[in-house]
Amino acid sequence: MVDHGMGVPQRQYRGRPMRSCSGGAMIRMGFTVLALTIASIAPGAVQPSSAPAAELIRDLGPHAAPRIRFVDTPLIARELQLDDERQVILDQIVLDYLTFVERETRALAERLAAADPYEVSTDPAAIRRDELRGAVRDALSRSSESDDAAKALRESMLEELAVTDPPGPIASPRTRELASWDTAHDQQWTALVGGIDAIRDRSEPGHWDAVFRALRRRNTPWRPVLPGEGVDLARIVYDHWGRDSDVARACHGVLLDYAKLYDEMLAGRDWTIARIRPLQRDARIMGTPGPWIDGARREASARGRLAEVNDRYLEVIRTCMNDGDAERFRSLADRAMYPEVFRPTAFHRLLRHVQRHSQDLGLTPEELRTLDELNEDYEQSLGPLRAEWLEVARRAESEAILLAAESEAMLRCYGFMGPVLPGREEIVGRPAVLREGIGQLDESATALVFGLLGADRFGRIPPSAYQPELIAGPGSSTAESPGAFRVVYLRGAGDRTGLGDRD
Image (cartoon, rainbow, N blue to C red; front, side, top):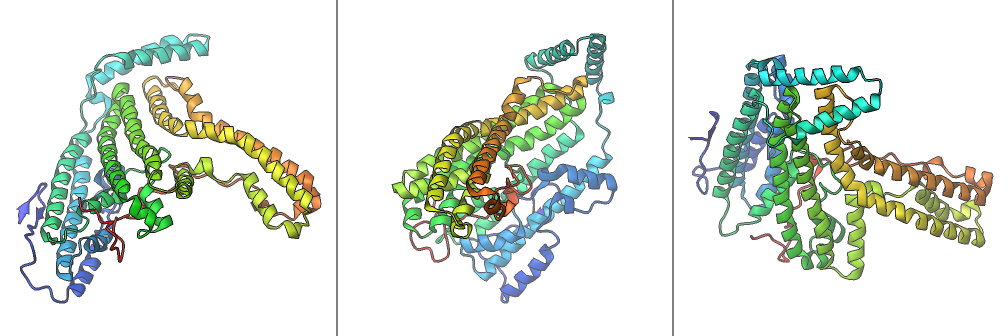
């Protein structure tokens, strides 16, 4: 047994098992039953011994999330072509890791619950900053011009942010403990990877790197925020054309390059967010806006780099397809990356319904031609609105990350409800303006259809055919969450076409 940090021993695995594992399926079933209480552990599922610790576990959230779950083991065994004996060992390796995560998350929460309080009163510099800001607010409160006061508060904040290398807050016990947790977690993950590497057949390496890329994408603890940030372009190809299709074979090299670059940017995003969030929390408590807002800027940048990988490879992947498939792929990718921009509008749904039920509604050939003309006029008006929305969608979400941090910092430091830079609000709100413009266009086009059909025939159309759909953006509860990602391996059942990732 080898101790890999934080007091939890990790078994050493060397090659094939030294003991007989007859009845491997039954043993694995036993592991499955045991793992049900551990394998799906989320921080909120850990049972601490105190109420403060329970609240801390919920607060820790993705910082303590496992990088693999027990449900992943059959997929790994299949990809690495493990027999029953080695799959039993794989189950134990994963179970050891999950036990570590569960145990150390509980211990971390208990230590934080017992730690000294982290608040302004413990830092003389933070007390002095708040006193100076209070004096500024008091002086401005005597001003009769609220606009002038707001401008002065913003200028005061900008002066704070303009200081070169502003001192950050003293790290809280929570931040220091999380740094130690990250180190120990990395060591335990390395032990898991080494254990799996030891039991796989080197003569048939399988998709070793592809497995861990898939695990990272599947189990990333940070949900996507920017449009296109969490979309898997390879999955679109495999789902639409099939893994054994000519398109998949022709695009194999490109898709492999895409998977590697996306994984690199995904790892960078996760690393950045995991390290800035604790620092932002400390800055919020101690009232140091520089690290707080700079962290938001770094997060937006990391998310943007990840989303840009999909932008770049949307075009690259199209180059390995014929013209028809390339256009179909663009359409599918656009709808996956920008669902709000490309979802059918109310008029699109109304027109489709009327065309499908034209005989039931008694439309004449002339009325159908009029509908086509209405659609052409509608598309001409819709095109510029959609094009602008597509252009500003991602920037608006990036700016929203900064706007939220700046507004919260202004409230914390100066008691002022508003952004540091008012112009940022206009950028963030632009998609809503465009959405409203499309809604008005829909109303006008629907009124023309009403005039064409008349009240009697239009009344026979169900309202669901033309009422606006509920909108689910990238960060909504109905959008695709990290936990919903399906593992996309480069090998499928019966694959004999050279699509394997052997790098």
